[in-house]
Image (cartoon, rainbow, N blue to C red; front, side, top):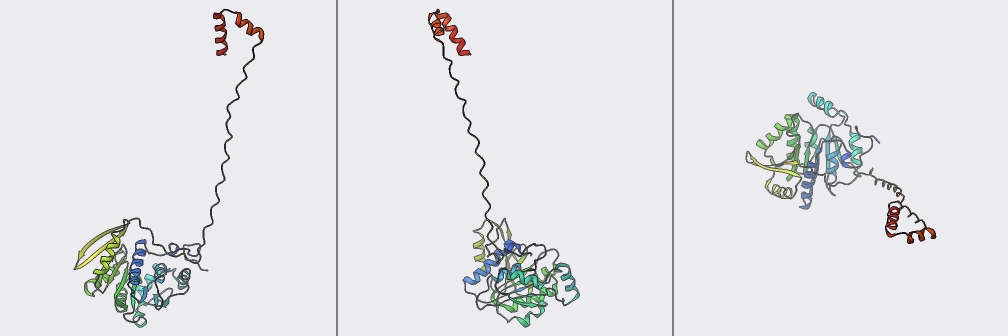
Length: 308
């Protein structure tokens, strides 16, 4: 089996898969998807840009019977333009479809629907209003992100959630411009912001925001602030020592061998008090002499014996 770069063995748990998917976003993905499922919101799942498959593996865990999960990536294929090609060569030169698929199949029995090519093919491949959740993490170039946001808008159900990655990283100004342009001019409503991702909807965000705030206020491992900007309520989140949510192990996981119990240290030999020395027996002549001597002399003899 091919092993992902930087690893020495197939992934045994989600943390073993290379990629940029912070614990806070793992929690938020899980919460939004669980909320949809508890409300019986049905729809397909979409991810643009998969890298080694870390977020895709989590998303695939939430695909239910009758739903389709589609991923789209260039992998090692040709980019549509020189700028995109330069970006792919710089950031994703080691990414191959084979590595993604093998990582994914470590956790799931079957692959998602894989579209290998530029995200511009999505409008022809995804039915309008068919998706409940879309994660956009492909190109960082403005024109491509602009198109990906438009494709997500057309693909999502009214109450669907879109997640835009790298919306405020210093090396991705194109994503920032496209994301906030969508908020100001294209009807996207922010639900919350993590350190890397913007979570939004083209529906009314207030109901989901209220539920999210209620959940977060019960936790002590997340910094929370609420601001207003251009008529939007902005919920900002930052991890505070947060642990990753539970996730099933891969098929490569094995129960760790129990460590052998440390050998019992040899008990120190018991220290015995020295046996009392036998008192010397006095001869009859000495005893008689002591009895016949004057008391002063007898006491002196006894003191001398005690000192000895």
